[in-house]
Amino acid sequence: VWGKTASKIYGPRTGNDYQDNQLRFSLLCQAALKAPRVLNLNSNKYYSGPYGEDVVFIANDWHTALLPCYLKTMYKSKGIYKTAKVAFCIHNIAYQGRFAFSDFSLLNLPDQFKSSFDFMDGYVKPVKGRKINWMKAGVLESDRVLTVSPYYAQELVSNDANGVELDNIIRKTGITGIVNGMDVQEWNPSTDKYIDVKYDATTVMDAKPLLKETLQAAVGLPVDR
Image (tube, rainbow, N blue to C red; front, side, top):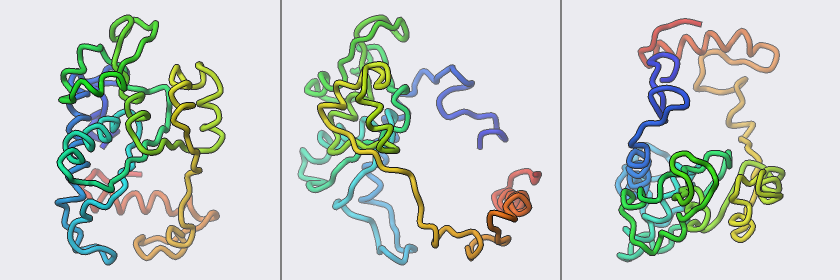
């Protein structure tokens, strides 16, 4: 829990990534592919047992870009997940997962995927010149490419600066912008049965610290406002 443990997701401190991030996110992708076939969802009123193989995976940003690749090599090649699809969603095009080209060998993928990862830029880090680009592969290997709004979708293909050098790739695959949203009835805080303090726009500032304390106590965190 960031702010309480001081732990970071991507590195020991801001701007300093863990050296094994590619292995960490590779494992995440493999776990996500296994989950629908093994997780028991009997406690959910809509499902009984595992989802099964007729699913759509939503892969978010470069960290999950290996998922469509692993889906093809580890599962579809063996007749598993035959109808499964992948939608790759871009939230911030600036973060692409660019690494040294020699790191491709870490990904446990056949050489047929090298072209999807192959990328050239003028930046020195992590190495100058040829690299692998996780996001490029995610865009090319997925069934659909999404982003967070129609306006951002247009922005990403407008020029190389806005697309951060992936604009040409995204123009070829196409991209759909979907505005973030929610069911305003199901998530109505004035009627939500799962929170102890109901609130609306006029009382949110009073309710928020009380609900924060309740959550902190429930999960064993220090209680404060």
